[in-house]
Length: 418
Image (tube, rainbow, N blue to C red; front, side, top):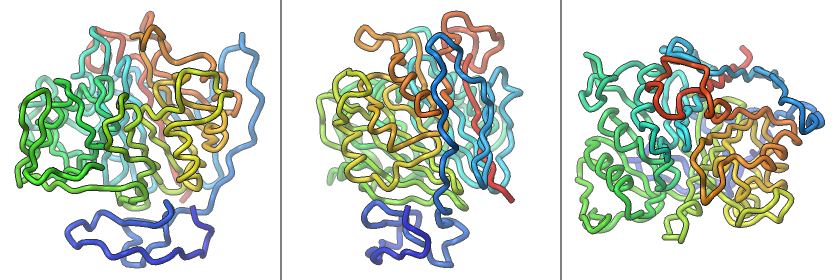
């Protein structure tokens, strides 16, 4: 973030039809005009993380912290055991909630402010896990939706709105529930790389976008002239009722008062592995910064001490000023393909979110112990969704007791000092 009082070069003007989008050069969040302070408050001064403590011996349990006081704010977290643990009213101004939803082997993360909601990924790769678990969690956190597409979670009333729905990349374990979410919820903005994946789950996602009249569809790939894409041999046309536009690395997007996100990595090319397309966002929630990485990688599986590469190297080279964060969604479910030590040192998270489950990735069940050890070595409190996969100690889980998910969800709450 820029030093207090510094003023970068003025950005080029934006088309008036995209008032939510603010472009900034050099991946920096510039000071904002007084007329926009209510929506895009400037980042607060950099807050130094608390002193790092040595990691415990490998045979000792992890520290059982549930909160951290960081200068002007408090960050607390709690495991979600039942629906009653999820507050069904929006957070107060100056407070934000991050919901790490246990979907088994996959990722779903809901961000709430007093005046916005953002869903980053929603998918599971487990055969026994139901994507509808995400709908159950959204109903608990945001209230039910009046749309019949919400199935058992629907209730009389207005259709529920999600201000931002983000697909980091088109893999099953990140997208499988979005084919249910988009028909159920009215999405205002949908974000994804635009890298076409010839799978049923990606086709269902695009079908959901096409049916979201009034939404704005943002892709890193340029829209085709005829607004038609071919997925698994089937043509899908996004109608004019859905605005289709592009975004780029460095773009800054208003979320609400004192909240915004910056695009740190956006890649639409058809890489052999869609993990390389992961849409990486830095969220500023007051003076707290959150890094959402999807499955951003550093290269083949290797010890965290190996050289950094791939997307993590790109982030270090092109967005280093945005990487010192408080909360990290750990890349690729804690795999040794990600989280190189040089990257973790730059990110220096206070809290690390690891969403993983029992299904093996190419023969390996994640997270890797070496990655967890590297996170603990830099003093991060590690929250994992896989702790009770073998034997969940809860009944009446959100979304049902079948499948590995629903046992280790967490709500992380950020409160700014008044």
